[in-house]
Image (cartoon, rainbow, N blue to C red):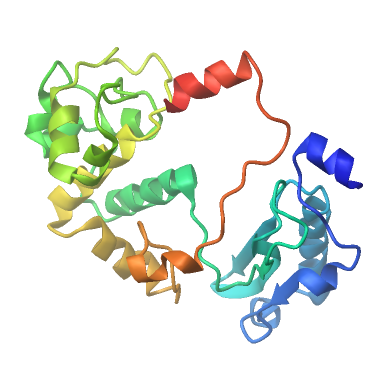
Length: 267
């Protein structure tokens, strides 16, 4: 794809030789232990390569586990330096399997997984009201809103007040106070509304209430350490911020009405 086309489509440059931008954790890939053939692994990876060739993703990481064994652990592309508007001579940092990447809203699935682990342990019932575990959440008419409704973006509190300073998101007690005081748009779960940043705080509070532990320690004990993960954390230490992959907006720039919908959903 030529430079003019890439600029118009807002995509990254893709080299002809993908091997030159591919990183493989050879020691970490053990498909034979899970009874998976090398042909199956390569078929999966060829799909990743086809996706990468679109130029929409400057870098991709993929870890696949089967029957407890890691059968594929590779990365392709760049962590930074090859975004749609990066200069041709910009320093290109390779994406590796060790590069930390911000999950953004994909972390909602991680939090949901933790809540389901709590359910397996018998510590919560997804159909219980949040207020059963955190009575203060009942404020503003939210007494009947269930954990299930929050998980499925039907919790009735899709956003915090628009005038809330951004720094409040790092003050767990203050954001919890705002959520407890919030009046829901509905309480019967009839309306789906993306809970962009509110749901995670509610689920975190429930988890910490029933376990007596922090959500960070809980994910360490049940996911990170058992699976040997280096990152997979909520946030990252300030000393490691420079290791993070860069963030790039790729693909055609959203226009109205899509841009309006995105703004309404995310604020």
